[in-house]
Image 1 (cartoon, rainbow, N blue to C red):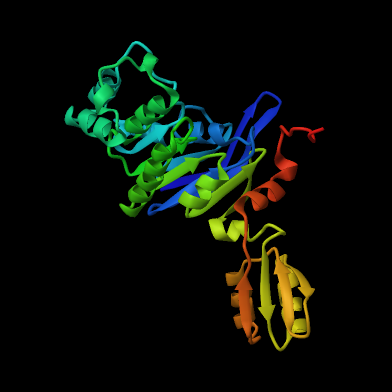
Image 2: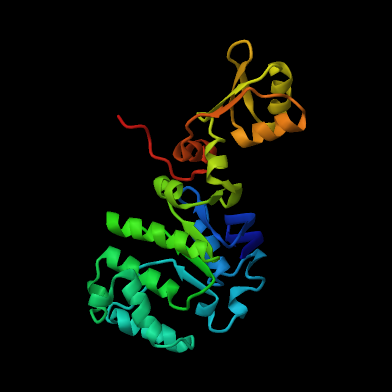
Length: 303
């Protein structure tokens, strides 16, 4: 498990991460989303002890990562696929890490086979394509067979087969009970891969919930509800942040609230429902809406 509590990082006058708190639990794939400059990479580096926080804490299974010896046994990470000496082969790179972490040499061969690099294991990393470097970075993360894994933009440079393989790998790792945190800008990948999301903007938490719940927060995500008491239901839903519009005598159109939450509130207030039908919801639409005022870099309108 990854636990982040009040995490803050300041670089001079720049507040990169501001009082950030969230939890990443085992057994599921958690997507880590935010606009460019939101503080995602800085947060990942603080979790791994590569950057020291100004305030707050980040722990992996209850302890700061820097206090663990042979860290690859406890957590694996892909932060920068280019962070490999170009003169070293894939085998040499992984072997050095295996020795320093007390791992058996067979793990080098096993992870190279798993990521599809066994055939180029003795080639220098400087000659690798971006996709091959990504695979080597994933092999590095898997080397210690750790219970916690962090990946920053893991599908960059991968071909469609590689993207599908990575998706399946993440789901397999989560099914084995591991904690998997994946940072990505690709909404389609999060829709296909993640179970839950942690969304930040300008270093602050925006949301921590399931993919479906987050997508339903977009104003374009509509839920159709039919009830004999639409007035009372509207009065219950509005304080929860929903926008409720009458659509006929017994029908309401609700935006800003997930269908499951609408059903829970109706049950709690003993309001009968004849129909509860969620419409299509786009994760990308919800992300763009909810992070619109948290993006530091926005392009102008095309001419």
